[in-house]
View (spheres, rainbow over the protein chains, first blue to last red):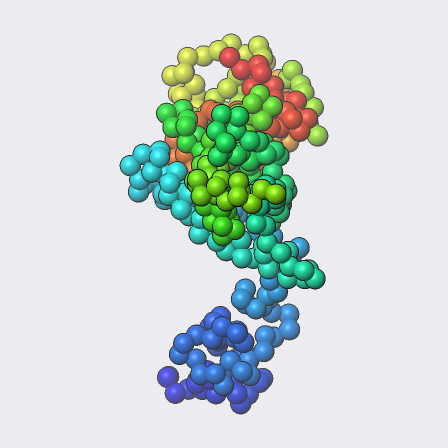
Length: 242
Length: 136
């Protein structure tokens, strides 16, 4: 039986009428990302069939319109993430910390992608070096890239000079989450806080970012993302003042 | 758009095993029972009835593919029962099934459903909001 079928590699090279795409693993059909065992000759000739949806690695990074993720699908995934994490932690703080870590991993990627999408086409690509413009770009561009809408407000703490807040009236990732009364201090937006922390780190503004429930009558899901900047950032901002 | 109606009396959600996991009365159309009486009543819904009519009220039942049942108690002449149940099913799918703190087949944490129903209030759906506002 093993000899009846031609070796996948040869089927690609010799007979284009054979349905070669089915023989290929997703990785080897990519022109840019070959699996380690696949010889380069294999990847060189494989072109994606018309009509077949290209491998995720082959899609354009700049196409955002058709590559949005279904919100219900994400809601189910995030629900499972929270359940999975909750089984492996010892308390609310631990759970928030783990969600933050997961968000951080997303944030590093989002930051790279955002920089690519926003600045690649620009004549004079730039990156924010001052804190307030950086915060504005998180409020507007990061939120738009991740949630499809800008955040609702930015606030500066009155008491502490190193604290800033980003406010989302109805965070889409926690829209369907209703936290039981005995865990009422838990905010699943810690995941978002992790994303923000990663982007701030990437921009060179190390900070501790946490999420807090700040519901109002009108917005029961209102969430505040609290940014506590490291002292080095404040010192630099002071030094950069014109 | 479903409009507010005084012909709606109550809503039950019954799990696969016949256990009552959510029960809420609306308005004054029916006398309140004890929670035990509700549980016993809910167990009767193991058969696939769609509508049960009494002398003063009507029960419309939506049986979902997973075995969860939604029962709406209405007046005999209420025409919107089916569409309301569909809407309730949608709210349930959003507010209950996507909530990581809900355990399948267990009683529904009321807060989640109420918040979702309130959200429908903001979207102008008065009927579902009435479940919140008129519930005791």
